[in-house]
Length: 154
Length: 154
Length: 85
Length: 85
Image (cartoon, rainbow over all chains, first blue to last red; front, side, top):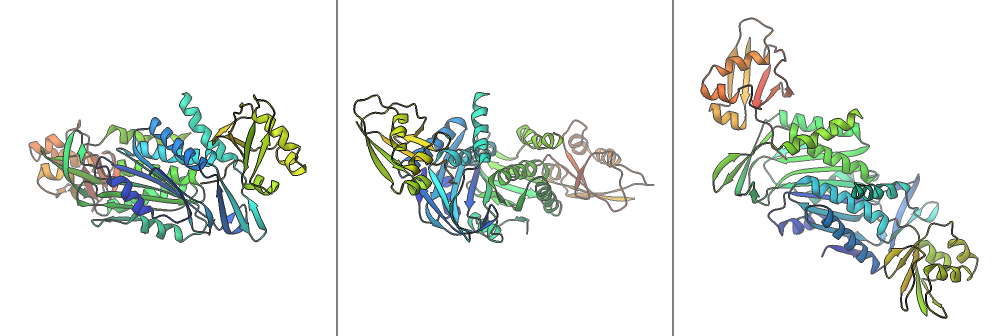
C-alpha cells in the first residue's frame, strides 16, 4: 500500500527494506521523518493530538503520490502518517521514495512533504503548560508548496 | 561520530534513532540511502568493489559535513559509506540530517550526497558478465555538485 | 435537497458538533448557500465562517472553492487550514 | 627532497603498484614536476598521466591542482575522478 494512516508507530528501516527490495533497479532511497518536538513557538509541548478526515486523508495522500509519479521518474513511494496522541520524540510522518538515481527521489520526497503539509487533512493540537491549542498553519508551508506549482508552469 | 567508512552493513532505523534521540528539538530527519543496482549502462552487475583512500576519505567526509553545518541550520549529520565487495540490493551509503524544520535537512542531505559524489575518494569497480570495469565518473554528478557552488555565490 | 456538512478540528470544537444536515428547497445550490445557512445558526457559526476567516472547504473529499454547485447526497466538509506532517 | 606518491583505482592497476617515491635535487618542486618525472617511467605512465586525461591530485589528502609547490614529506596521491556514493 502506498499510503497508511495509523495510530501505531512505524519502523523506518523495515519500511525502507520492504519498499526497495521489490525492485533490484532501485539505486536511490530518499526519506523524510517528521518528529514531535518538545518545543513550539516558545512553549513546552507535553503532547500532540492529531485529528484527520478519514477517507479524504487517504485519498488526498494517494493523489499526491500519483502526482509525484507523474512528475518524476521514480519507482515507488510510501507515505505513513500517524494520528491520535503523540509525545515528544515520537515519529509523526514517514515519506519514502525509490528511484534509479538520487535527484528524482530527493525532489519527489520533498514535493510529497510540501504537498502533504498543505493538502492532506490533518490537524495538530498541542498540549502545553499554557493549555491546549490548535497549531496554526504556517505561511512558510504554503510558499513551500507553491514552489512546485510554479515549477510546473515553467 | 559524524562519518564512518566500513565494510559492514548499517541499520538505517537504528542510526536514525541514535542521531535524533540525542536532541528533543529535532523535528525533521532527512535521509538518503544509495543501493547497488543489478544493472548499469545496460550490463548485468553481479557485484561491486569499492576502493577508497583511507585517511583522506574520512577527512573529506568530515569537511563536507562541516560545510553543510555552516550553510544550513541543521543539528546533526551522519555519513556512513561502505567499502569492499558489495552485491546487488546491498546498501552503499547512508546520509542522515536532523533539523528543526524540514527545508534545512532536505537541502543539507542532498548537498552532502552531491558533494560526496565528487569530492570523497571512493572508486567503484563493477563485475559484470562482460568482465570487470571501473565505473566512469558522471558529468551529471559534476553538475549536481556545481549547483551548490553557484548558490553560494548568489 | 439534503446536504451533510462535516466539521473538523477547531471548527468541530467551536460548533460543538462534528456534523449537521442542511436542507434546501430546490436545486442549483452552491457551497456559498450552505455557508449562508450555517452562519445563521449562532454567534460561533457566524464568527468562524466569516468571509475573512481562512477555513477550507471539501466537497466529496476534494478541496474546492465556495462557488461549486452541489448535488443531492454530496458530502461537504469545513475545516481550518491543514497542519499535518 | 623525497616525495611519496600513492595511486588508487584504475591508476593503481595501470601502474601495477600502489605507491612510488620520487626524489628531487633541490626544493621548490611542484606537483607538475612530479608528473613529468612519473611520465618517464613507461608507456602506461605516460598514457595515464597525459595532460588530456582527467585524473585528480591530492596533496596531504586535500585535492589540489598541479601548480601546488611541494614540501619535504608531503604525501601526493593520484587517482581517477571519484565514483562513490
